[in-house]
Image (cartoon, rainbow, N blue to C red; front, side):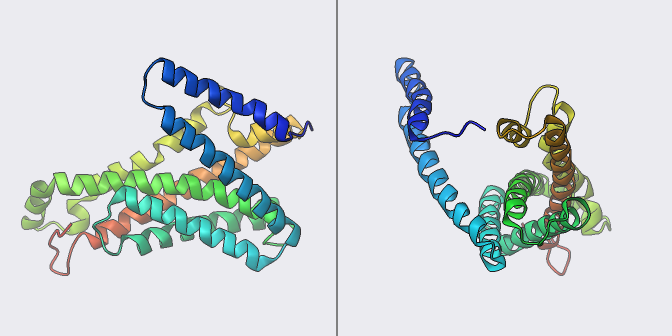
Amino acid sequence: MIELDLLDLLWALGLMAAAIGLSSWQRLGLTWNLAIATGRTVLQLFAVGYFLAVVFAWRNPWAVLVVLIIMLTIAAVVARNRISQKMARLLPLVWGCLLTSTALTLTYTSLLVIRPETWYEPQYMIPLAGIVLGNAMNAASISGERLVGALQNSRLEIETHLSLGATPAQAIGQYRRAAVKAGLIPTLNAMMVVGVVTLPGIITGQLLSGVNPFNAALYQMLIMFMLAFSTLLTAILVTWGICRQAFNEAAQLII
């Protein structure tokens, strides 16, 4: 494997310098945004690289759990902010949904597919958790935002169904199904074109590190199947939880 050093990083930064120059030349107003994004990328990845190097060398289950909880909490906050900041109990709901889908996905994968020596093996647990959490966060954000928007924009229709005797689940069933489908669009699109139009980051990174291409392809299949399950489960749980919070005990829409 060809390893990169700081000099190589400086040459790589030339790409961002060129992007900033193009933005300035075309007067796009993106110069400051590109500069901030570049600085944050360097600082955050340096910090993550050194931190994970310590965690990987330590191989302590509590350290791995702390990393996973931090990742989970950040993902839940980001998803909650995208869905709505007005629903008081939304953050615990999203946190629990992400925890459930990620835990089930990682448990199944660890026990039946990868089977590492220890369940907390950081080499596998942290990268896989990051991939699953990132995509589950997107599914929660998209499906939750779509459902909340539909409930707010279709209040009259929903209340009409309720007045005619429909249960809350029946009154908003079509909106919930549409929201779940929307949350799955990015994952399904990625599965349709993987290996044909795009090479995802996992398989690309493994190929660059010298892994056998066939083995890299097998790992990418595993990743895609994990994402399909976790994103679908997350979208179902988040929309179900929002539906429960959208009505009071008298079956009145309060969102």
